[in-house]
Length: 101
Image (cartoon, rainbow, N blue to C red; front, side, top):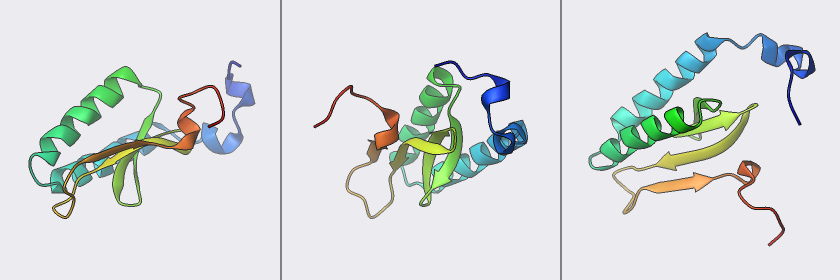
């Protein structure tokens, strides 16, 4: 199903590149707070996600860097000093598979 400008609700039409820029600033700030080596991994993930999926908008979600489409979080990651491993996750709205579990 293709989306046209006419089919997008008026609320989404008003969002501008300024919203995406402020979201990106917030995500980069959260990545900068991460301890090494999570910070390096977070910076690389940010580059990969924004390059390979430019339709996703960076934002923070529960204080984690996340990327959303149409206001719904698709993927996120976190890595704090209390985490043994960095976590990268997809939300159900990512539609990675075609069926039910």
